[in-house]
Length: 221
Ligand code: CA
Image (cartoon, rainbow, N blue to C red):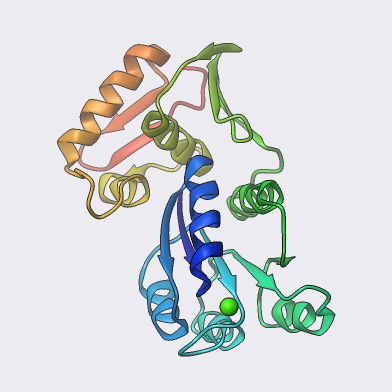
């Protein structure tokens, strides 16, 4: 899952970035409204966390421009404490949820999780596809209710596929949502991770569609 964090307060950005990374998300940070608008308009994020007070272009204007341009990415707005009018404006401008500052990091992460899964049609925090379950709170994976230990990268891969359910995810999209720009992100590195996961999960869970990408078996393998 790929998250854009738009926050010009360096300390808050570092804290939130750390918490979201620890929760298994690939996080990109941006401190300027104009740049945020461009990134949200041209890149494919699973969630955007948006501060409203920003240099360049304020957060509300950024959000309105995304929505006017047809961008439906879920947006969690960070508002000033007690400012009910800011919350109303944010929601009217197309925010999916808001969080007043200061906030508990656990609450921000829980709201992020809920927004991402709801935007993809999942009602609960445990995603089940065929024999596989992915618990997005504990970042744990099980097959036939038996826990399978996975690395953070393996978790990100399996969680992304589970969020997409029976959609075949193209390899470039998967690379985009798993790795930062500076990481090794070749398709054969991805194949190695998939091979490792297959050994751990057992056969028939992750399916390869040659020339297309990857999907999870929904029929119980
Ligand atoms: Ca700010």
